[in-house]
Image (cartoon, helix red, strand yellow):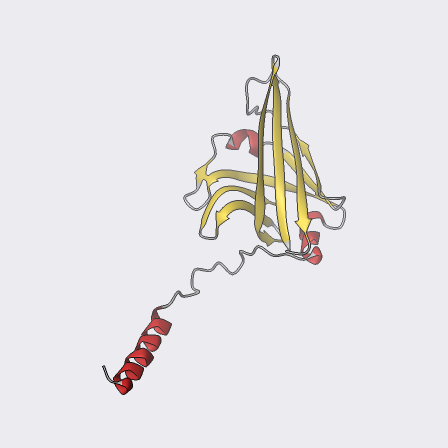
Length: 167
């Protein structure tokens, strides 16, 4: 291959690649992983703000609900501006056993200002006789709008576990 043919081939290859590269038509512009302290006002309104947990997914993109969706979505979540505290009021549905056993959900959120990351941490505990059963997980904030928050694990367009909060 001569030098001029090589340059011609390289130029054509670059042109073809530029037209066939990934497009930005998948409408994911609202998904982000970096937030500011001003963005946090949407979460807590500089005091406290109640959010409804609408769905708890095992796999967000395929809309596969977690088996415990009902016991998480009947709880009330109040996000406060005070050091990432979340007050959780338990509902009637029990995740671990029957309603006669005590179940407690603790939640908090953490803002890492240097990276702009926000994570929610949830721990659900129940006393089952002499045994304590616990479930603990942490998810990153991936979408924040005035009336919608999504915390999820995994990569964009392939989120696994996710919590969808609405107002």
